Image (spheres, rainbow over the protein chains, first blue to last red):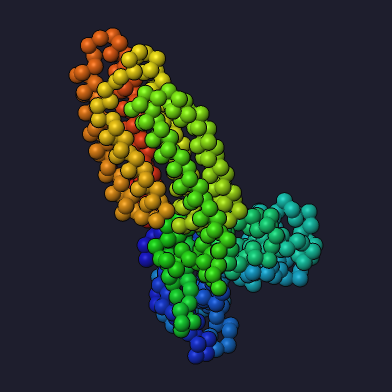
Length: 256
Length: 220
């Protein structure tokens, strides 16, 4: 893999029982860039995202074929420890899901499990600052995280994810449950975080994909209902001059 | 179920506005050239007074494009159509101004030349080519016909050749007396504004190619 790439999907197929949900995905993800997966509901974009840190393992009947090369190793090979993989490839979900514990505990929980030896106070401050939340919560670190607003909770979840210093952050519609201002804060945060992390985001919001991502992958289904990659390019090319008519029709709202 | 029907209708209305503006510019050029051939001061003044309509049309097209960009967040081909409409309206507005410049030249000729008779050399021929280009480019815009746009742009080379020939002829035949020299200067300006029509139409051709293919090209 070239230096500026971090992840390579090769002939990826994902099945749920006998149903092929994702077909023959080949895709290289660039390091320290934001890559957006877009496409109509059921096109497999979240399935591909979950395949990248083996979250599909947790779904009964899910099966993955093909390779996902991360740091020269296929994460689908039998020897891979999925738990430690998820430390290096973290995930932020659609609905903020902080633990019903203090703000501080939310950050330190993962670090404690992973045997973090450094100063926990520093880790909390650094992570919350990186997630642009520190100024809003620095005086109430011991308060229950569930008392924060939805947008703050989501930034706390991002802080919790980056506290274990992953290399890739997967985001599955991270702002779809948030109001427009909270959404823009998350988007600004993603731009800042992409200097240190590689971000892959699934979004239904086309404007969001065009605003924040560097590269966009468009997926859709055919008659076999298996999601496949239609077009993958720089976001500017996808949104100004897509090469595939299906991409154009989807992004300009003519189907989907 | 068809979607984006309302948006498509709005684009269709915008296209009608562009064509309407193009027809007004065509008429302004026709009148300006007729005023030159017939040395008709009233017709020349009409061109000048009617230019405000063309200017207002440009503003109206700009407002519609801005509204559609703000409210519909167009992307890809939809976005290129709106950017092209904005660019074309600017080119058409400049052509309207050039028709006014020609009309003002006619008025100057009439004031400076009591006989009202001037040789026009090949300028009517150049105007006929420009009119054909304008007519065809508006059709190419509506039909989204990049090939026709490329073909129209080639005619600009003929315009340029005639423009250069007129310059040579004016220098050869109209520099003997002081009065002739004054008229020659005005005729050279008119010649230049006609040539500029060709350039603006060529620019429109390039935007039509961009709108339909996404590629920036240099035509002609």
